[in-house]
Image (tube, rainbow, N blue to C red; front, top):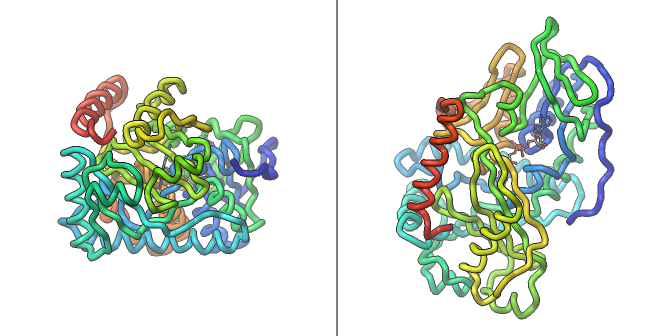
Length: 413
Ligand SMILES: Cc1cc2nc3c(=O)[nH]c(=O)nc-3n(C[C@H](O)[C@H](O)[C@H](O)COP(=O)(O)OP(=O)(O)OC[C@H]3O[C@@H](n4cnc5c(N)ncnc54)[C@H](O)[C@@H]3O)c2cc1C
C-alpha cells in the first residue's frame, strides 16, 4: 500500500565487522541505533532476510501500546507493572520522536484502544484488566453494549473498556520511518537471510545466502526465527497469526458504523480477534493461531471473513484487499528470551504478539547491556521464558491448549 522505496543491497561478500545485528525490525533497529550512539566508531552491520517494512515489523495490526497488554496485566503486582509501563512509555516516546524526525508522512496517532468482550471468558478477562487499570491508576472509560455500538457500529460485544494509552498506525510506514533515523555509519543489508551462525576465534561467523561476516558481537533480533539459528530452541516457538484488510468501505457502509473514525479493539482473551477501522476507512481483522506452520490462504480468508461478518452483519460480504500471516515469537509463560546466551552472543526475542514498542525497548537495553551500561532487572520485571518440550510433544501440547482455550473463548473469535 506504500510507494516503492530504494532497497539496500544484499550482502554478497566476505568481510569482518565489529557487530552484526540480525533482523531490522523494531528490536534490531533500536539495538543498532543505540549501539552506534554508545560506540560511534563501531562497524555495525544490520541484516534482514526480507525488505524493511515487509515481514512482521510492517505486517502487524499497527497497535503500539504504551502500557501492558491485557494478558500480561497483573493487578496483584502494581509496583512491578508500573516499572514495566514506565519502560514501555519511554520506548513509545522514542518511536514518536524518531517518526517525527524522519520527516515522513506516517499516520501514527494516539487514538487509544478499546478492549471488548463478547462472552463469559472475555468478560472475566475484561474485569481482570479493569482491576489492573484501577490499581495502576491508569485512565479508562467503561462501555456497555449500546455505547460500543454507538462508537464502533457493532453490537457483537457485551462490554468494553477504552484506554487512551495506545497509538494506532500503518506499521510498515512506522518501520520505514524508523529505519531512516539510524546513523549512516551502519551498513544495512536487505534480502540477506542469515542461514547459519558459528563461534570462531574472533567471535562469531554469520553465514548468509550469498556472503558471510565475522564479528566480535552478534545480536539476534530476529524474534521467532532465533530458534531456527539453533539458539533458545527449548524456550521459543514460532506461532503464526493472520490478518486481513478490506478495500476502503463505501460512504454508506462507513455511515452504518459508529461515530469514531479511527479505532482499534484488542481482545481480552488470549485467542480472541483484533479489529480496526483505519484512517482510510478499511476494516482490519486479525485472528487464528498455528504452531510453526502457516495454514492455506483460502482457509484463513474464510475464517477471517466469518469473524468480520459476525461483527458487522449489516455490511454483508466484504472483499479483502490483502490477507497475510506472520510468525510471532511465542514463549510458553510469556517471559522473555533476552540477554547474553554465550560470550559475544546477544539475543532478544519472544514478543508474544505485542512487540512493536516492547521490542524497541528491549533492543535498546540489549545494546546498553552489551556495552556495560546498567540496565533494569528485566528478568524480574518481564519474566524469563520457561522450558518447552521438543516436538512432537510441543506440537501436541499446543494443539490441546489451543483447542481448550479456543473452546473457552469461543464467543470472542
Ligand atoms: C498479523 C500480526 C499482527 C500483529 N499485531 C501486532 C500489533 O498490533 N501490535 C504489536 O505490538 N505487535 C503485533 N504483532 C507482533 C509484532 O509483529 C511483533 O511483536 C514485532 O514485529 C516484533 O518486532 P521484532 O523486531 O522483535 O521482530 P520482527 O518484527 O519479527 O522482526 C524480525 C526481523 O528479522 C528478520 N529475520 C528473521 N529471520 C532472519 C534471518 N534468518 N536472517 C535475517 N533476518 C531475519 C525478519 O525479516 C524481520 O524483519 C503482530 C504480529 C502479526 C503476525
